[in-house]
Length: 218
Image (cartoon, rainbow, N blue to C red; front, top):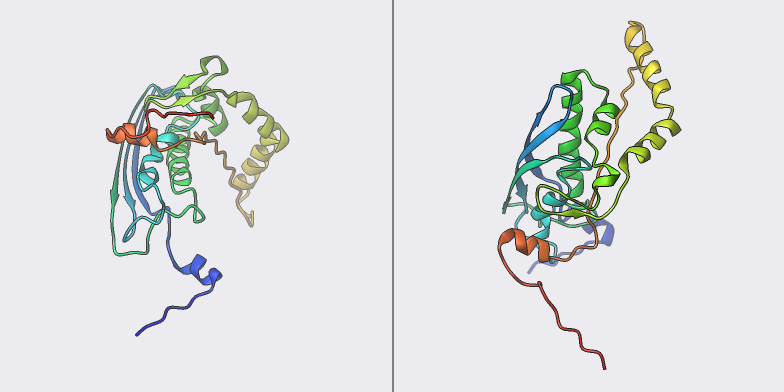
């Protein structure tokens, strides 16, 4: 007989995992940086079995976040969940098991687009944000954002960090061949739909489960 004994800390560090996604993404955009379409293909590793109570939420959660805070008119997203010979997958304390992956993908693509077009990474976000007057906004994947005002929020953050000053310092370091360190500046935004039940995932999968309820008051 074999007896397995582990502490809570050992359990946290050695069992279950999240975030093992293989992702490929493409953006279609105009020369002035306006994003017109998004295409994403994802393979989501679930491990030997699902550790969370709602296994559909793990891969399907990608649909909530992958279009970001941007008014992208067209999107195609394909997510395949696969089982492998790893620990059980999809535990929330490892990560939100959808947000980080989706945010990394869309934000990295926006950064690369800015680099290719020679547009500042903050400016390209301003050009593509969902505008205040567009709310409530329905994404091309059918999910609704009820409210938001992204541009002034980012402008306040840039002012607080002295973004232009940091850009000047970065340019100075890059121009100095004797600079001991280089300087990177990252900008990330994301929008996550929270407080959602499994019904939207079931809709995506074509399964009707929690579309209605009966409330009785005594």
